[in-house]
Image 1 (cartoon, rainbow, N blue to C red):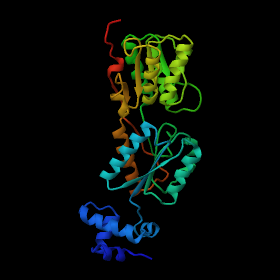
Image 2: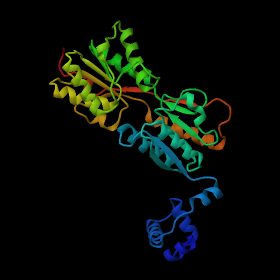
Image 3: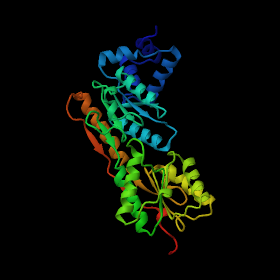
Image 4: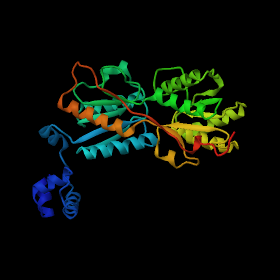
Length: 338
């Protein structure tokens, strides 16, 4: 079996230098790092991760479980988590749950096997009723709205408040029939129902009675947003504002409105939610709710590190809600007076 000493001899460095390269220490020259990695590849050396973790009690890795890395929000979340982990001396292992209960339970099971020092998991299915599934002896932080009780550390968005502010903004800019694209009132509480509740609250505050035909459930995808507009226009439903529950939906709505010959923002004003990177570069650029991604990721790491020092007992779980703000761009700034 190839040993670390064999790699050191082949690379012409000390075993300590090999260890520093393997563990990602920053104070190793690029030339030395290259020599060591080439020797590792040439000799077929493999780190005994289990033995190393047993000795150190740490993997140096944080797990991140998201519904699907292909989703713009999840991809940007992963980038933020990786950057924050690097600043704190950790690496990140990203896995997809497929937005399924089985995938989420599987990610938690891997954390129990000590594959990670801690796990950040974006939950779609697991909620407060599943608290027993979350390991008490491994740091885990849940992202999202399904976990909100006192048993699991969690980070959430200001879903209700953000959607209410976006709807108020549309009404203040003259909209009288605002559609909630992706909205729904039924089912278990989550981002969709909370954002819809914020939308309905803003309408009622303005003295506008919500119209059932303007509440349009759909998946949180760009294709679904475009399809929702096609369905509304085919049914002859008039609307002059669209409060979209995600930016991905909103980008599809922009496409659907363009296909229908409707101008944004002069005919219809559009808002999104999440402030993903594409929002600033769409045509027109998208007004959206920025939910405090950076602050939420930092809070999640603060929680994980705190639990590494003092594992969760029977006390109250930690909670954090990101600070939101409305980012006003071209999609709600009319070019001509009505």
